[in-house]
Length: 505
Image (tube, rainbow, N blue to C red; front, top):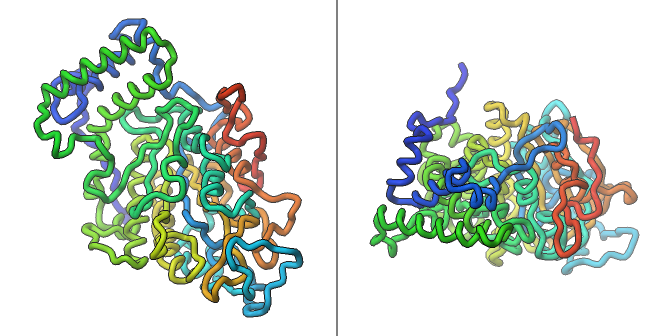
């Protein structure tokens, strides 16, 4: 028996005319400015103002795309490839022996103890027989859809710089996140929701915080919009708070109507001013989001079997300070379910974070002290949420044109630190891809017998290669997606990047 689709399409969507009347007269929102934006897009506010504010999302693929949307799963703190995805029998064989890398090694802290076997046993999964660690065994249900890359290399073992590199393609601040580049290159699939949405860890931001998804020198409307799933107010300042209780629908509409007119008159004499243009765009989008976002984020509309699949509770309890597997399943699964709802409503790029940067007790993947304690709950939450997301997208026909990227800032050492932890390893780690245009059930690139460096040190895979491949699947030549900044034609992949042919279907 086929399970009913939990996708909900409202039968109460207003017609264009009634919607304009509603926005003009409605309370509880930025009605006037939303209507002004709509009229401007229709050319009804005068040709000069309309010409000064071109419609966002005018970009288009350069060739036939395999995918329309992207989900990036980012494990903040550096997830251990050798405990989750990259099976190393040699580590099991040599467990407890003095680590000998065959070359001088500079550890980030004090992580050059004896060789240490994986904390969980590995078993084969799927028709492809991929070996997975027990803590991520739930991914075994979808492993035939996944392409693993085990020879990823970074440039630094410092969290902030390495996180920038995976997020923006550069180690330093001041560069746009990948989602901002995709927004700039392709534009929106839905005027009522952001093009690029960020779902942070429920405990706080990872290293660098919003700089990871900033628009930098790109127009401001391409920055990621933060949504805190599971909170009473998931989008800050979308609606007036308690101090704004005195605001009436009429006064708010009048204020925003006046502000819209003032902004557009100001812009008419300053063609191409990106700051004011981005501000106007944000006001218009906020108004439309007041109608669309609450419905998109309302998980009460989902049937019980969908919530169970993602590990989401109807009413989650207050969680303890220690990392808890049920907490991670609920929180990460909730973000994955919200991502699915956003994708099917036209959001183009969703970034999901696991782990924050708030120190101790450890609430991220930076497992120097006790990897089993930290990685256990986090990886179980990841596996449950990601597997459910992949299955859900497939059932709805969305997986075939959605690319999923799993990444982290670097890997962890095969030697031990303090007996139960692992140090940073920027020389080798794992990424995996799934979905639109990806050949599942394959492994591309190998690490050496210890997972310390790529087996072929002359041909590693870099973040620029991953970014180039994803842009290619979206129909974009990564060398042609550029933006002039300070006299330089900048791009997401800098001057690097080669397609990873082995993962392409």
